[in-house]
Amino acid sequence: MTESNKLKIFNDPIYGFIRIPNTLIFDLIAHPYFQRLRRISQMGLSYLVYPGAHHTRFHHALGSMYLMQKAIQVLRFKDVDISKEEEEGLLCAILLHDIGHGPFSHAMENSIVEGVHHEHISLLFMEELNQRFNGSLTVAIAIFQGKHPKKFLNQLVSSQLDMDRMDYLKRDSFYTGVAEGNVNAERLITMLTVVNGALVVEEKGTYSVEKFLMARRFMYWQVYLHKTGIVAEQLLIRILKRAKELLKDGVDLSCSDALRFFMTHKISEANFDTSVLEQFSKLDDVDILAAIKLWQSHTDLVLSRLCQMVLNRQLLKIKLKNKPIGNVVFEKHFKQIKSKYNLSDAEAGYFVFRGIIENRAYNADRQNINILRKNGKITDVAKASDHLNLKALSKTVTKYYMCFPKDSV
Image 1: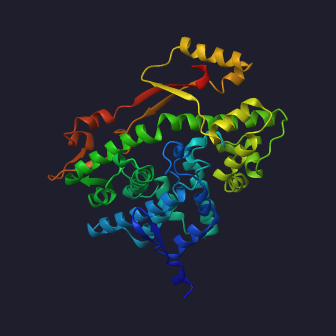
Image 2: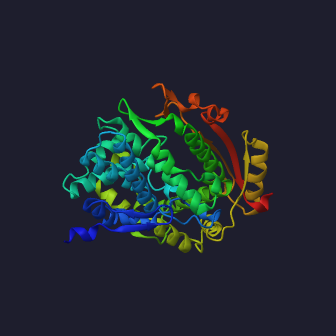
Image 3: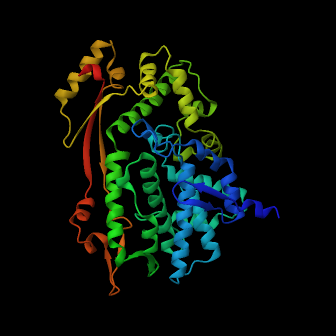
């Protein structure tokens, strides 16, 4: 009788009711490692641009699981063999695929730890949970790593047309109010099938895939790589960098124990052990925001000013160009700020800096999207489509930016 109490439902604003299919999924969701995702923003500081974008990784994980349930249902209807064990593995893998994200998701991926991708940390969490759940996640881990003999299982979790992407595009579009990013995930899932062990899309779904790729391109340039969002993320990264420098110099800074651990230890893949994982599991957006609120009145001009910029949304000005920004323009702003506030070169570098952003909406070289034609042939979507834009979407677009204080204009 106690087990039936675990088969609960969530009311999701995107899909309606999401059912928890079994007790293992319930216990994973109830675990503190997963509950932490309620305190990790899905879109970093994008709410400074789109006020509604306050949804979390918790929302996204549940939504991705819901879409996976739909995909399993559709594929089984088309006589694709998915055992009960593989079904549970798929649901666990997609539920936990983002559990390794740190505070503000991608914004601080290389600030808290150095060169450790969130997918690697997700795997560490899954392996730790697998021990605690007596090997229940062994199949899920094999699927997540792409080591399962059935290739299409991994493609459902991690590919260019996976349940992760379908949910975040639809969800982020909803919460930002950017309607152009909305994709018909249910329609796309209905068009999926498996040929020779690989995931493909039936030919009648070609236009749906086109819409999906166009929506992805739009969301990247309009939302994820929005210039104001870029400035906010860069300021966040620089706040942590400055705080680390001050701590190294013996300056006292108040913050949570978990945050202090990562600011005073150099953590890489090589030394990311179980004890580090436990510290990481205690870290979320709250630690960062609480620290920023404390540091806004710190005696260090650089740290306090950076914190005030983020808290009060008084951000740096940003110029976004298709060509690299010249040294003459850069030096002009750099020298002006350095002189005005009597800063060293290193200090001025926190307020005047350049960078590059890149995006490719469709990568034909890595787990491409294949279309199953009516004659049985398999064709890459870029070739199957009569839409000229799809070939353009396969090319990497590079843009260059420069940030500087508005009073140096």
